[in-house]
Image (cartoon, rainbow, N blue to C red; front, top):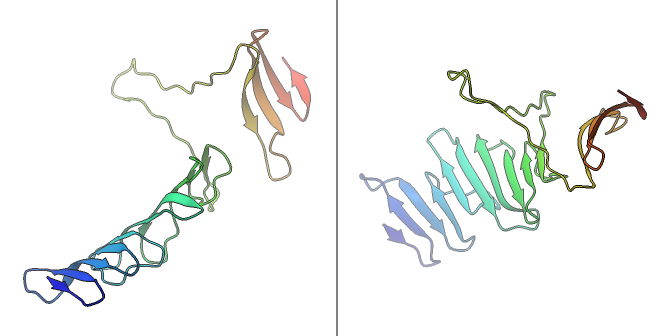
Amino acid sequence: MNIAANGDISFYEDTGTTAKLFWDASAEALGIGTTSIRSNYSLDVRNAGNNGVNIQAGDATADIALSVGSTSTADKFVITSGGSVGIGTNSPSSNLHIYDASGGATLKIESNLANAYDSSRIQLLGGNLSTSEILLGDASSATVGRIIYRHNGNSLAFDVNVYTSL
């Protein structure tokens, strides 16, 4: 163990040559497996290949941000100060925002496939006079199509380009 004059603290592995746990006093950040903590991270965990988990906390954008992988990997999971969750985006525009830059964003809900009686569900709950909706969109319009359940009339509608069918 070494405590520097500036308050940095290093804990070394068994041979005493490589710091495995490092407290950066000026940045108030902890490095595990590194003494070069990445900017804006409160906790930086890496293995010998610079891969690991990085946690950023307490800035104006996010209370918690996680990135996994190499030093160039962008945040993979963010919880904003307002409580929104972003997966693949660091600026979620709704309560849960999933983004995949490669074009294949998928939300998967899976039950126990070994049990033939297990079910998977998506449950949309709304007030007695409201609607529950599934919106379908593209680059030109976020609501090109939608499936609407109207609670006050117990009706289901399918809308495509403002036309209702069924």
